[in-house]
Figure 1 (cartoon, rainbow, N blue to C red):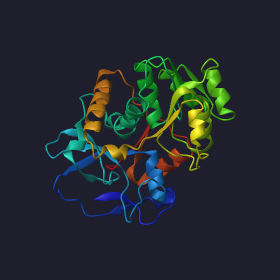
Figure 2 (cartoon, rainbow, N blue to C red):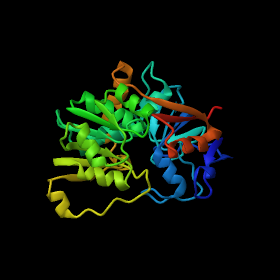
Figure 3 (spheres, rainbow, N blue to C red):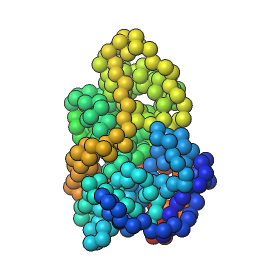
Figure 4 (cartoon, rainbow, N blue to C red):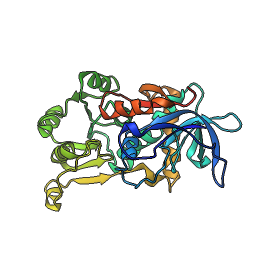
Length: 317
């Protein structure tokens, strides 16, 4: 079968088309024919071996897929062992979900890894309370577009989106954000101004570096910062406990991989998100579908911040 295989670490240039044997079903794993493979920002770290888990070569990246089971059922699923950038994958049936009628493959992919991350960031980590203000950084991205909608639907008092371009800020506003701002400059003052001069209650942050630092300083008493990425590839300033105590603030990290060992933490949220899609209560923003051989172009679009929403690879072309 065709796949994208990495045999050396580096940037998008290391994503190369390869022919490998089609995987055979194994204990606890079923084979699915892939109709769409999800692309996530974490995949760009995987190609560099710069993410949370060390990688071993050779590898086929990709943590999610949409495809067909042996009986023809359309499913979307997560891949704890990777391998999504391929024509066929092996996945545990417990981490697959039927795709509702009327929901496209790309839309289903938008709510699996990235949608579940937004769900857990707001519910499991931040414990969002109705009426609280919520800042969603990178609000036009895969997680951000879902998080803006969920925060609004779950009663956030004010949803503040940040994005790097006017086009992306307009997108965030169209999804329900109350205000959309450019995060460049004095982030603390920008966020306070967007919140009517008050500090903010919840921040969802995936950039690291100065964005993390400014977001932490902008928190109100009992505010929570949830960090789920390091897109800038910059480390934030070390945190002194006294700085947390001074405003009774909390910093929480989230990595969806820890839910793979607790499938119940994924079944409910992903089912809920798919149902919302099917009902038309949630919008999946699709940022582009690329042929499998153009995986590098998808990674470039993520890294240069030109993309919005969910990016997808089509292994059939």
